[in-house]
Image 1 (tube, helix red, strand yellow):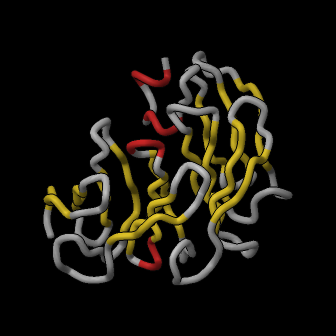
Image 2 (cartoon, rainbow, N blue to C red; image 1 turned 90 degrees about the horizontal axis):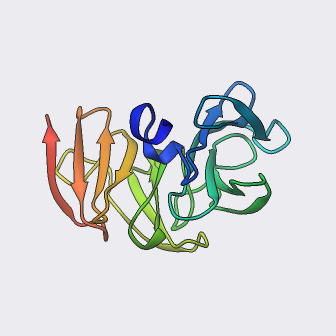
Length: 185
C-alpha cells in the first residue's frame, strides 16, 4: 500500500493511487497501489515546466505546479479522469502571484498552502484558488525565509516549512503565525 509504506501522503489519493510529476515528460504519471501504470495526465501541451504534484486527500483533485514560460501557476486537475478544472496564480510579486512556486500542501479546511520560494513566503488560498493571505518574508529571523522549499500540513492544520539555507523546518499555526523551528537557524 503506497499510502502507508512508500510515499508521502500528498502523492497518494484516497483510493491509494500514486501521482508522480515526471519533469522530463512534463506530465503526471498515475500508478495503482501495486505500482501498475494507469495513465498520464497533462504533457507538454499542458505544462511548460512541471515541478511538483500534490494529491488532495479529501477530494478528487490534483494540484500541479508549473513554473515555465507560460507563467508561474498552479494547475488543478480531476484525479479520476485527468480533466483540467482551473488554474490560479501568475508570475509576479503581489498577492496571489508567484515567483518560483515550489510546493503545495492541502491544509485544514481544504486550504491550499503554496511555497512561493522566490518571494520568500507561503501563500494561502481557498479550495477554489482564491487568495486569502500570505506569511513570511526574506530574512534570518524565525518566521522569515532564505530558501523555502517544501511544505507539509498535519491533521491539526499546523504547517511545516523546510528552508534549504537554514537547514531546518519552521512550524506555523494554520493562519501562518510562527510557532517554533527545528534544526539550525
